[in-house]
Amino acid sequence: MRHCFLMTKGFAAFFSLLLVVASAPAAESFKVGAFTFAVPEGWTKVEPSSPMRNAQLEIVQGSAKAEVTFFHFGGGSGTAAANVARWFSQFPGSEEKRKTEVVESGPVKITFASTVGTFSSGMPGGPTTPITGAALFGAILENQTGDVYVKMTGPEALVKSSTEALRHMVLEAVKTTAPGA
Image 1 (cartoon, helix red, strand yellow):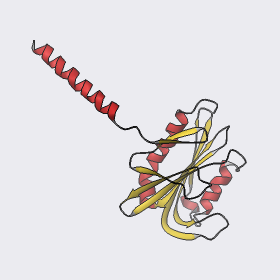
Image 2 (cartoon, helix red, strand yellow):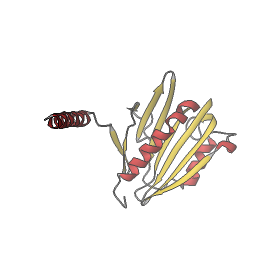
Image 3 (cartoon, one colour):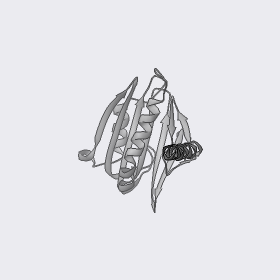
């Protein structure tokens, strides 16, 4: 009889856990090009600050704020290497701190790029504002329907502490994309 009581309690706990998981709100998601990205916990989807941006996220920790921008041009936007070089050029003098990594996931080639230093914020070819103690972590997802560019910039400590969440978001978006997309 005691065994039956314990099993009943066990099933009740299991079903209670299922109800909690089932009622937990799903992460907000959005689509850029062929990829659907889930907003990491604690990050906020905001209105893009430029019409060139397909989506924009904000990460806030205390007084520190980083932004994550998403672009999809549908083709003709240059090679991944050329775009990484452009990103790195926004951090003059950071040559020794620049890192790239290429990952293949099915038909998608992902180039991750990171650096730290003084960020020359602003539109390419326009006036810039130097921001010291900044960092970049970005990803370029090469795809048949056009590459997608994901770029996080902000204070070095915040970008570094958010890097794994961005990396995970990108890899999950690639996993859930239809093959050949």
